[in-house]
View (cartoon, helix red, strand yellow):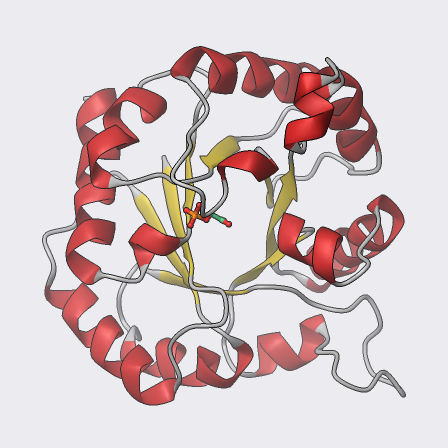
Amino acid sequence: MLIAGNWKMFKGPRETGEFCRALREADLPEDVDVVVCPPYVSLAEAVQALAGTEIGVFAQNCHWEREGPYTGEISPALLLEIGVYGTIVGHSERRQLFGETDETVALRARAALEAGLHVIACVGETEAEREAGRTDEVLRRQVSVLEEDESLVVAYEPVWAIGTGKTATAEMAQQAHELVKSLLDVPVLYGGSVKPENAAELLGQPAVDGALVGGASLDVESFAAICRASSLVRS
Ligand code: PGA
């Protein structure tokens, strides 16, 4: 089980330090891998505040080149230099708001893996795609550009469930995860309005290997509660 907190554009270094020090003291299960994904400017603070723990620090994106004239981008090498362990790529907010495509997601994933970072690659259909019965086709297309790797994890995040309070039913999640797993032999996280109240049901599905949590990861107690729920369903 892997529970990753995607903080999006929340928490500068000061709040990150406070959060991470509180997370160190929280009651976290030992059999769950826990990861936080702060904004770039807070990564170094998170690495420092979590030093000596098993909690991993991931970025929310990274570029495919090692260095160069790419204003506003951050490379895997730069992340590794400050002790970052992995990165998210292809989040639907990047696909929808910042022009990310399957091709750029593939480039980012490959470069990050080659550089030695762990990667959470996000896939998922929009509401219109689901209503048009195109969920499988979209997932197949998005997954087809990724290559199996022992440091790769896929996150299935139905776009209509992100930040909306709507969650996929456990059956929808199980079905989508089975499809992804039939295409790529990697762990698959569920993401989209995961909270302490619904975590056990979603994480109880056999093809669900963890969660990518947005809103509910911003509070130490609710994040820790999701980590505990994920441990209970597998014990
Ligand atoms: P949410 O976000 O949990 O706030 O829906 C999930 C995500 O975007 O990764």
